[in-house]
Length: 272
Image (cartoon, rainbow, N blue to C red; front, top):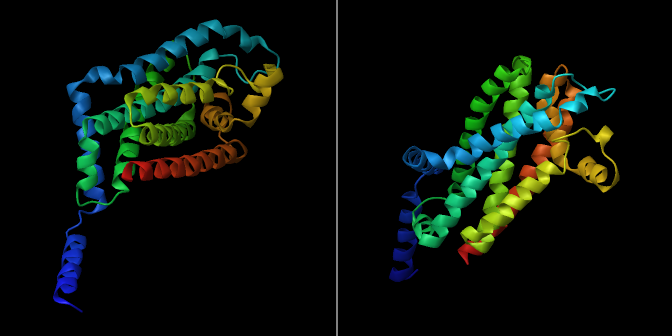
């Protein structure tokens, strides 16, 4: 072994030994996002105000559906409050996409890539931010929903709703990262929003499958978000059961896996 190659090997080992662990990097990225929120609270407006607006407007517009024979509840808020929480969790991915796109445009993301840390932190960090953002609509929509008349779903129902909100925030965050990594522009957020809104509205968000027909029924039937909403709503409509839980778990895990691959392959395009 030559002196040059020996020195290169030692330098590589030194760089590897000095690599920053994953957890501190993720924690720093999450803290940076939280500081940005405190400095610009208006960034939370979409994920706080829009779910509340949709909850109130949909509850008024669709109140008559509770009279349909076989509808699972006679309280329209039991139907729309969990949907609004899930919707707010989905909107959290838009904020993650905006932050990442801005970092890509101003060059800050390149500085993160040059840091001596593992590449997974640049995906896991934004996902952690997305989950934390999803907690804000959860703790604001629910109290308002209860004040308007929604029934308390029990702690099992709250746990199911929180679990679905966390999964949906991860799903929307991975979708946003995958799109932004490929297009590397804030203009890509329009596509992110279209994907999120289409997935939510082409499901049982507004009405159950029993009152749908035509292509909309077919789209909602195969939409995995339908199973997630069933899982989220079960405490508000009926008791929590495994029969209503496992399809949502499978749908959530499958979407997280596929969109995780989508985000990773998109990140590789940034690396080139």
